[in-house]
Amino acid sequence: MIHMKQQIELTAKISVCHSGKRIDHALSKLFPEYSRSYIKKWIINHIVKINNRVINKPKKKFLREIK
Image (cartoon, rainbow, N blue to C red):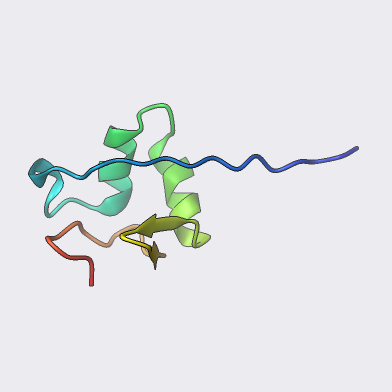
């Protein structure tokens, strides 16, 4: 049995209404076809990038600048 991993690329602009919200929550609203728990796994596995920076903490909040 062969398991192939599918690679997808999602892009979105974050609006001011997401400022102060958890990254996993905001991304699940921006991409409703993916569950919050699925997005959380992506974040924990260092797959999510924001402004070309890897994000690895789902609890991190969107601010004007990710620190």
